[in-house]
Length: 111
Image (tube, rainbow, N blue to C red; front, side, top):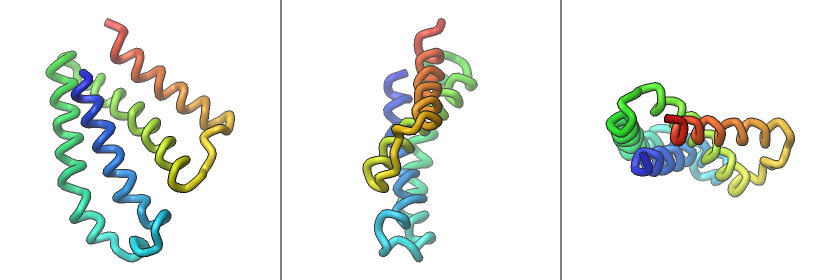
């Protein structure tokens, strides 16, 4: 399970940079093809191994989907706050991040 979550974290970090580097660094603004070539294969492999690892651990595809969803929201929130200074300390955002963490916890600890 931990290996799958780690692959989801790495994959979501790569996905964030693939899609959002254009907003952080002006140089990336007009390079969607280059961004896809650089990030697509590593992030695709990370997601593939994340799902494989989680499904082999819990024998349930739904768990991988829900854990991936929760991890993606947390990673997105942290990176967006750090690089774009968009606050995660809004009631709506904090609630959604809390729910994402709850989804992960339910999938990991509820047997």
